Amino acid sequence: MIELLTDQGESDRLYRDWVQALIQGGTDNDRGWVIDGTGVVFAPNRRGQRGLIDNQVVLGLDSSLGTWVVKIVRPDVEQQDRGKLTAFGRNEQGRPLLLRQGWLQKNPISRTVREDFADLSGLSEVPVMTRGQASSRKWYVVADLSSASTIPQATAAFVNACSMARSMAGGGALLSAEPGTYRFGLDEQGRTKKVTITGGTKEVEDMQGHVWAELKKLVGKSLTKPTNSGYTVDAMIEPANALVEIKTGVFAHDIYEAVGQLALYPSLINLPDDLEPIILIPDRPALRPQMAAALDARRIKVYLYSIGRVGEKPAITFSNTFIKRVTSVGREPAPAKKALAKRKAKA
Image (cartoon, rainbow, N blue to C red; front, side, top):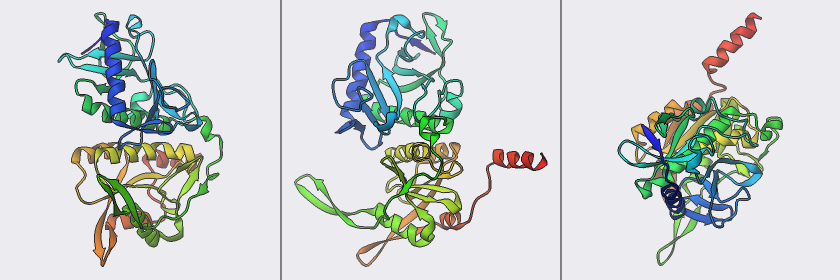
């Protein structure tokens, strides 16, 4: 059981600690800060500019078009669970937790998400007490504040879950355009790029470009890169109903970023609504079993590629299951769609 804090001074200190942990775990950019390795952006206001963070933090995958995903405000302990949607509490072990109600206001991405927040986000509600009584509101953990080093990644995971909820809910203003109104980005190519290291620079292979180019050889003209309003997917293979995000690593931040992209891009770019989300990752090191199980629970498919060498160039080899998946025309409809099709046929 989690008990909401009643001391405003303690609550304010925890809020400052959370903000500081985000800043230390982030990198400045022109939209505010990016939580390192996640693609999650945060800023003190909806304009998406750096500045003093005082009473609120907005978080999302991009600051343009009003597409902030969720807002965390400095709690007012006097209001307890009847005012702002953010609070701090302590669990039975005494660990401080940042909490947020499962309530996302309508914005250009989605309709209001409230009663179905848990179903759409995949997050689990936690029991909360306020002044000795069980809270009637539904609360979810944003981050455990007992370890500053884990706060940025935990917060990013919460934002990605909210992104998933908004994408699945739909109904935002960005969906007013007809699907297919996007443009197409340029093909990618394998190349060598320079990166900054201590004491100078070094050349490294842009492995994503090599993977994309090999995928283009496999699939041909059906592989496209839809783009709209500054957002671009890695690969859409429409005949196979596949939306693919390519990653060159399998660390948690790589997967968080891919999940967030797959969740929001269909809405942001106005893609067909029946594309199956796919993450394409290297086979070494292996994806952690817990992460693989979590992706499977969210119905996100994971496929592998291997990296070899032919002379001085990387050689990309895809798994047989991935080749079969992306070269097939269409796929088996989801159970709900099959049931709907049967009902229509009987009507």
